[in-house]
Length: 276
Image (tube, rainbow, N blue to C red):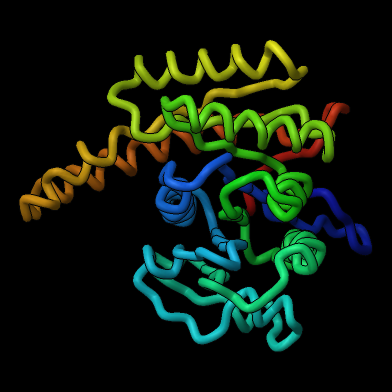
């Protein structure tokens, strides 16, 4: 699935859909969710590029068990073209890795990062989807990533601190970037019923103060539950655990991709079609 928005000499040119995933605080399992989401997109929906935009605590490459020699910092500093810094990993997924403890000024890189995502969207026609793993928090770089995306996905837990920090992120995105629509995934929930209750509470909190459309896209089960078999070393159960993750990811993606694009105050009319 891709957006067909531009024409060149009468020929329709496809643009990838950009999905940015953010969280108000660290420790909510965002990066693990992003990696699994990207793998599922690549496997079942179309060519996918995962962009790790974290310059301080990037770990997508670690989760994907790869050791890239070039990364997004090389691109931002002009030492590499973006395609030269993209690495193919598991099942054909493309990764533009971040860097851990990069020696850069985050404020000065924010505009470059925003421009890079715009460039990827304009020039990355070989991809149907671009998934951006944003740093935790509500810094200017995160807000910029959300503002140039087709979908802003917020990851929350059923914890007061997660609610407070996620609300702060959404508030800043609304006030500073005028975003009015957010998708939400509840992580580490014990059940579907608990996840829906957590989302309903969070939506109610946001709705009391902001004119924001909050959309529920699904949940992931408690990771301790999923990883229990791995800890015990049962390979058959490992496969069952992975299947459970994949099934939940597919539910999240079906819900997310069914939503019309556009997060601003005016409705969007972008046509979404399957790539021929």
